[in-house]
Picture 1 (cartoon, rainbow, N blue to C red):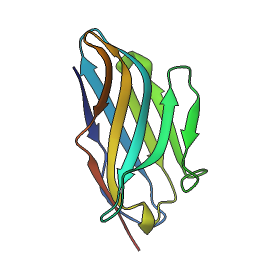
Picture 2: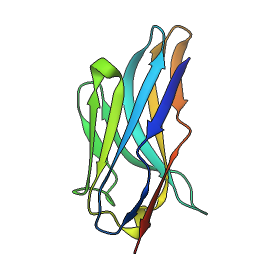
Picture 3: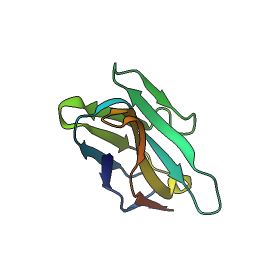
Picture 4: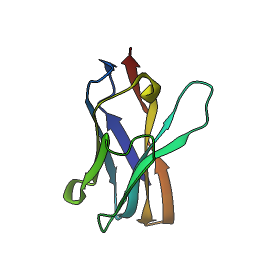
Length: 119
């Protein structure tokens, strides 16, 4: 009922920056939390950062001080500014949104966007 489309993934050198975007679309929905997760080859999907509707943010220890999550509630869009990228940040980054829609509670995922950091 809520679709997410990510963009912004790319190949970048270590120390570089990228900005990921995720736009939510659908009808009659209210988002409570949006966030970013990532999955590296051979590893489990892990939390990167989340932001709730009131603006409270949460970050994985591995990205604190380097990544910044923000949102534009009017556009139902969440962003992830990634600075000082490291090769270990290489992963597929997935957007997640949770909230209430016409059919009840939803927990939606995007298709993922590839971030590759070269050393």
